[in-house]
Image 1 (cartoon, one colour):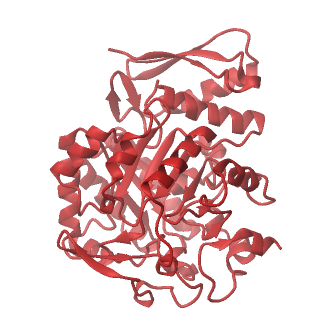
Image 2 (spheres, one colour):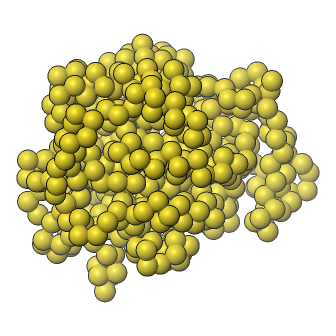
Image 3 (cartoon, one colour):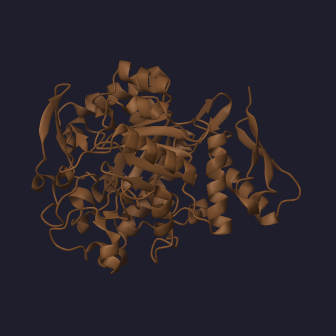
Amino acid sequence: MPAQQTYAFTSTAPLARLRASVAARGGHVRVRTAAGAPFAQRALLHLFFGFLNGIRPIACIDGSYVHSLYVPPTPSTANRRVVEAFLRRTLLGMPTPMAVTIAVTDSCQCSCGHCSAGSGAMHGRATARAVQPAFRRRTGGADVHRVAATQVQRPPLSTEELRRVIAESLDLGVGSVTFTGGEPLLRADLEKLIAGIDRERATVQIFTNGLLLDARRAAALKEAGLHAVHVSLDSPDPRRHDALRGAPGTFAAVRRAVAAARSAGLLVGLSTYATNRSVERHELSRIARLAMDWDVDEVSVFDVIPTGRLLESRSSLLTSLSHRRLLREAACLNRRLGGRPRVTTQTWTNSSRGVAWFIGCLAWNWQFHVNAYGEATPCDFTPLTFGNVRERPLDEIWRDATTHPEWGRRRRACRMQSAWFRERYIDTIPRDASLPYPIGRLDA
């Protein structure tokens, strides 16, 4: 049965007159706005849904359409919250986060050379081999180690602390909560955290390496209320994927995890990253083929970014040619595959093409990140902290961040890929400093 819902934005005074009937019908989102609201508000609302209508739904849940795993189903209350954040930020200049990513652990069974969660001293960590795990133990037949070696002197956020972070994030306006790591499935309380999130306010997804995602765990996650799972796939070649992960058998685990998630009724994505080498070899097309064969809903392609264990490896940045090639390949795949699996690239969100003009750099703009120890950072790629949630409420940190001279403005492209930004905010971090580094010390 088609879903229909009335969107009202009464919690934002300037939007109080804006009301819309939003319905999912015949593969399209039908929107009717009531008279009385300012033209600019109604026009921007139609633009938002017009973009969704330009791409085919990848799934239908209880009559509502899923256009991307990152956007709550349309229509839904969580989707209305995301739309409200979009209107507040774009029209009213009132920064409101759509999403939060939360690292619930820094432990992991893999040892990826490109790991963005890996942290330590500023220098001497350009490769995975330069980083020694802080501790190592065995679980489920695999080695587990901490990737954030410098922060082991204090414990990760507890269950209650994470619940408070989630609640404060929802109060800020977040409509999508993503759990990352490390490997989030290593936390025994993950299902409790998921179950505690009001589905009327936000959807919940996780990023995982897949090693622990079997049929039993997938069913438990679905029962807890998980919306989607993204499984990391670094290469379409099994041997190369295992080598990049530093753990034999991870490619096979990805395939098993995808099958388990699909059987449990979860939405499923593959998460990968683009390098100049992989773009030149058209590896995305091969990954998309696997995604189609495995019945995956979406493929997310992040740009390789000099951060974490690659922090000082600027040569890894995608060239302008690679960005252009990646845009063309993704567009071609979306046409050829008919929109499912959908291919979503970070290169596009930073391209300023069409609706991407409104997106740009997500950091402290549309989302933010909280690491396993409570440090609030612009995103999980930026090694700068604006405060710790154990010491300051999130709304205070958000207010300070969104009025900062740099993050108080919208950037159309990823800051961590900007030479100017890195020279100002990354290269000036003192030698041997622990990360993430307090932004206040750079501003002083």
